[in-house]
Image 1 (cartoon, rainbow, N blue to C red):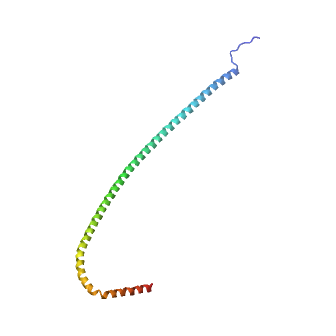
Image 2 (image 1 turned 180 degrees about the vertical axis):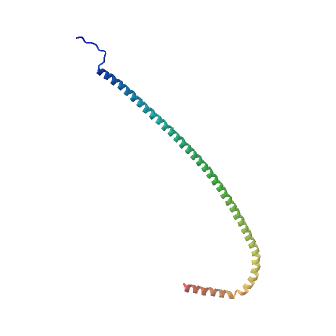
Image 3 (image 1 turned 135 degrees about the vertical axis):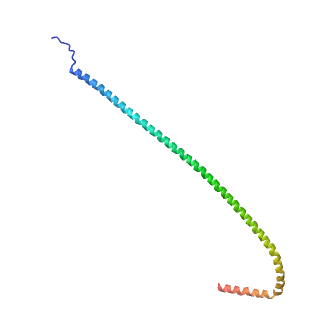
Length: 158
C-alpha cells in the first residue's frame, strides 16, 4: 500500500498552531496591559511630582512672606524702641534741668534767707544778750532742778 501524502494538517498540529497563536495574542495583550499600567503609573508619578513642586513653591512663598513680615516687624520695633529711648532721654534731660533749676532757686532763696536773717539775729541777739546777762544768775539753778525731777520721774515710770 502506498501512502499518500496528505496536505491536510493533523488536528494536533492545528491545535499546536492555534495554541501558539493564542499564546502570542496573550503575550501581546499582556505586554499591552503592562505597557498601559506603566504609562498609567508614569502619568500618576508626573501628577504627584507636579503637586509636590506646587507645594514646595507654595511653602517657599509662605516662608519668604513670613521672613518679610519678620524683617518689617524688626524694623518697626527697632524704630519704636529708638523713639521711646529718645523720648525717655529728653524727659530725663528736662527733669534734670528742672531739678537743677529748682536746686539753684532753693540755694538762692536759702542764701537770701541767711543774709536777711543774719542781721536780724544779730540785732535781736544784742538786746537779748544784755537782758539774759542780767537774768541768767537765777535761771541756771531753776533749769538744773527741773531736769533732775523729770529724770527721776522717767526712771520711776520705767
